[in-house]
Amino acid sequence: MTSVLSTPGSAGSASAPGIDLGPAVALSCRECGNRVELGPYYACMECFGPLEVAYEFTLRGDALKQRIESGPANIWRYADLLPVPADVAQTPNMNPGNTKLIRADNLAKELGMRRLWVKDDSGNPTHSFKDRVVAVALAAARKLGFTVLACPSTGNLANAVAAAAARAGIRSVVLIPANLEQQKILTTAAYGGTLVAVDGNYDDINRLAGEIAAEQEDWAFVNVNVRPYYAEGSKTLGFEVAEQLGWRLPEQVVIPIASGAQLVKVDKGFTELGELGLVEPTPYKVFGAQATGCSPVSEAFKQGWDVVKPVRPDTIAKSLAIGNPADGPYVLDVTRRTGGAIEDVSDDEVIAGIKLLARTEGIFGETAGGVTIATLRKLLASGQLDPEAETVVFNTGDGLKTLDAIAGEVGPTATIKPTLGAFEAAGLA
Ligand SMILES: *Cc1c(COP(=O)(O)O)cnc(C)c1O
Ligand SMILES: [Zn+2]
Image 1 (cartoon, rainbow, N blue to C red):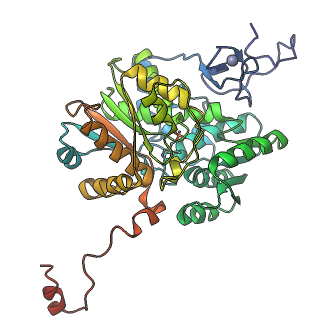
Image 2 (image 1 turned 120 degrees about the vertical axis):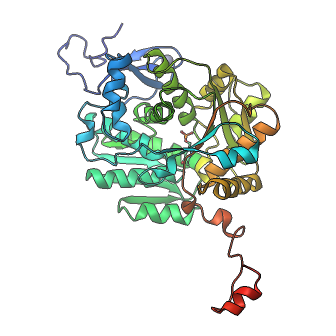
Image 3 (image 1 turned 180 degrees about the vertical axis):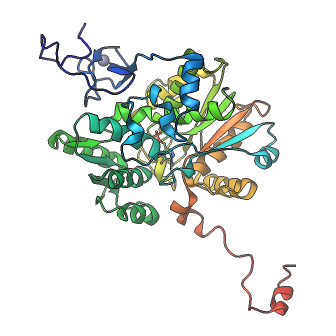
């Protein structure tokens, strides 16, 4: 077996320094289990399968719980479970996480559910869950010697990368589809990095990013060449939900799917908490949500396939518009293993979902949130999701970034002259 700390091809140089990424000890192939040293690698050299971070955790149980509970009020309280150096909180970063877990009794009542929570990740610094994954990718990229932070993005990742690079004082290069929501283009451009609008969809851009990454050795494409580290950031969503529930796992979670990494890593987070003795390893079901206009994983689930057939996306849920999702097969594994399901909803249902969440709970989600709420409703209607079981639904982005989606749908109740007479005449009292 290859020593996890030696460089391939440099056998004998046992003194090759290890990269300090905390409890992370190696990268391992998700398909064949082959292990390689920590480094800027993302595909297995034996079988081309995706690599993921392997750990040797030193703390567990109450000792670990105490470390977490006395840590900072952001994702770095879980640093002992992430591929980051121990001093990660001291380096300039966005300090994401610690978003609200909101008891959604009004929405639960409307849907006929007993106990429902919304994990509202729009509360992150750039208003989506992407700040979590970028923070972990940045910490690893620094240790791996990269000098530029880059990404292909469906929108929210662009915001998160540009902002994190600005805070860190390094250059960012962000590639986005030219037809992205205006709000996401402007909020990214404001951070001052290199922003490239590409005439193509996300899947075209993702391919281009892979080609650029092969040329630019100093560029860390967070979701391409440092993807194994990036993806681990989503575990913190699972960690937070469990800690906020009082170190318990919920019985059901509903999670939106773009590449599928978030869903897969929330499951990994729940599993690790059980294995490390931080929660009772109680059973839970993981449900996935897609927009019908980009639903390759939902399609594969329903057809009983093990592989995901790529599609050309056409939906207002642009943040989820990945037609060839990298983690699709693993999403199928997780949802099937846990007894969950995957469902997809129309753009009209997405808009209704946005309005339902806003009207019942005062939470204005973006289109991805609309997808998730609408999917929750559909899974209840079909009997796949149990209304009696404690459920957490994820709102992963902010409605202010997708205003066009509801621009024709909501507006003033009335427009009047500034007189009491006009107010009364409009029947508003
Ligand atoms: C990127 C994104 C997701 C899904 O992310 P994956 O890990 O790629 O599945 C969900 N919600 C929002 C708002 C996003 O921007
Ligand atoms: Zn392999």
